[in-house]
Length: 339
Image (cartoon, rainbow, N blue to C red):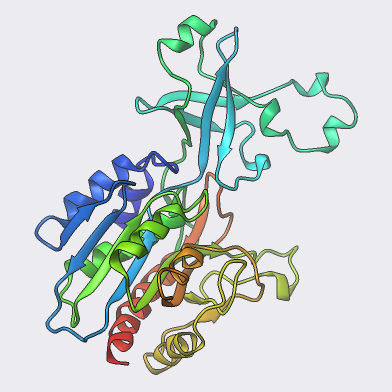
């Protein structure tokens, strides 16, 4: 899956600009599943299994990544930006970025350190004080290259490093998309729906529409979640750890997950000897927040990949966690159908 994850992560696709990601995913669905694209841009795929279980099961992951958007062009040609999704401004300043569909090279900058006040030096640079330098000298020159509303994405490259670790932008949630593509290419025991959804990072918008269309009995959300397993974090605030296996949530800020599915996920992992962990904090959220309250309600579970430095230019995951997440998801889907 690493080669496909690399391909997915290196495609730019912030919320509202998922078209290139969707185009690649659709190219991989051809001949492997039936699919359609709704008006918002969600891909709704159906994979025929060896049999029907009588239950409608939907597996979902989002295509969008966090990033920025161009809001204004200064007289000197630099660009003003606003965040798209939850980004800590500390991970943005000084970074290399790509602007628009032509992937124009830029560098995020701002006021020089020697011009900062004593108070400003104590704080991270806010987005409204940042600019993107694309190497031009005037607004007119910049307008030949970029437009207001263009996306601004981190320019970071996929890398394997250390003891089985991977670093890249957009692992949240291209990893979930990659797992679903692997499942779709394989023979499945039961008929299953797969939704590749848009605009999760700005309010779970795509999942709201996709779940309404599919109207599932059960849903499984695939995500990446914060691993704060660094020396400065206390044990209860590490949330989860790399190489601890897939993360099964009992609650986050949007969802209290179905208790029976939560237990079933851990039972499945235990029987198959797959390492598995839960989140030690009620924090964050994902598309389950929209899915589980769709129509008459949907029994929902979430399985996430532990990820350090989430929503940054370099998210970090462990290769073994990616493989174990795939294995748990594959077997968990079958057990949901058998319920």
